[in-house]
Length: 108
Image (cartoon, rainbow, N blue to C red):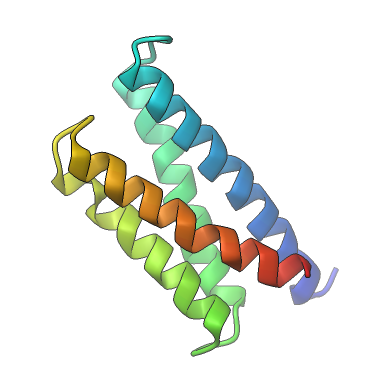
């Protein structure tokens, strides 16, 4: 397996983690599900690890690198806001919106 294939696998698993974490966040906010804080933080940590690992496989200073870095920054500043607040919603949405074009570029 070469690094391009590994990068695509990481991007795909990142998309799954992002979607899952984002969906869970909205379901928790709407009180449709319950989940321990540790379980939600574990998914969040896996997403951060995935984003950092993605950066290692992306070409430095490429558009993909900057999209991944922007998404990572959004996830790193996410805990600074109050859980469920407008800040939390806006920052998590921005992180996802930075990640979507990254996946589209990789699989186009």
